[in-house]
Image 1 (cartoon, helix red, strand yellow):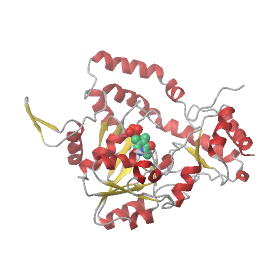
Image 2 (image 1 turned 90 degrees about the vertical axis):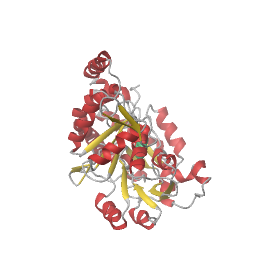
Image 3 (image 1 turned 180 degrees about the vertical axis):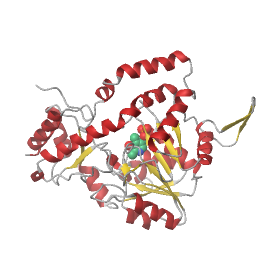
Image 4 (image 1 turned 120 degrees about the vertical axis):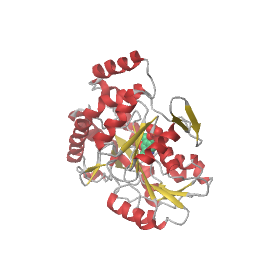
Length: 373
Ligand SMILES: *Cc1c(COP(=O)(O)O)cnc(C)c1O
């Protein structure tokens, strides 16, 4: 029997870089400087340079990056933040942690990203920010998004956790815009094991975020120290930063490989199965995930277990968030967002990672056809 195909292979993702990563991490450990040292600074600098971004603040994870953005924007009690129901739980949890209210809206059934018409309709005098999410690495339409934000005077916090390495009309995600939040979680296209970064339009905001990042402390001179805001403990470790630095130069090659594999998926996928496929976007998306939406009447758990029996791993990213107990308790109800609910109940993430082999794609397509027959 052929070896199993997981939906994302973390070990293989870094296997080819292991030698250089091991040596680099050993150098950090030998230096005795584990946090807020030269590696963290280098990662921020190279990240900003790689994106062509004004400034970047490295943090412990992507959720903290969203949190910092909300703090820097001054979002708090009584404020509302509009976001997509079809995302990782973190996008909205960060809003709750800031003391504000997440306002969910439906998604566009074609892109599966936030419906910008619905987003605009939900902006009111309480709206302090909007958090669009680039699901699977497909960027939300930035032209329309920023036109809406400008018209209504709201700030944008881009949840670009999945779109590091993606672009919009030839410009890297993170190279323009308001607040751009990235995650370097284990599953993401670039990983620092756990990590994240917030990319900001100017240095004053970055300085504010740095304050929030570490206990609200501001230092002056040799021994001066004050606390101005109730900051957190959101810094990235230097070990994590070094692991990120080691991958940065390889990112575009990884993205190219993802695109090649996705083109193969599109070429081999049997359209008569009736599954919804993602938009064939090879200009903007970084193809963080390849996701299908099962046709009505197919039970997802059964499909996934038939693939598992064939040695193929799959995932669910994500169920519609407003249906979670937490949000139902706040008054959100089934039936409010039909597209997010239908897609969230039928979406399946198929295997996709740079070290995946061409023949693995063939196997996934074959096994899916059989599982749906
Ligand atoms: C991964 C992810 C996050 C959170 O990132 P962490 O680093 O895991 O905290 C937020 N939003 C989306 C859409 C994500 O995929």
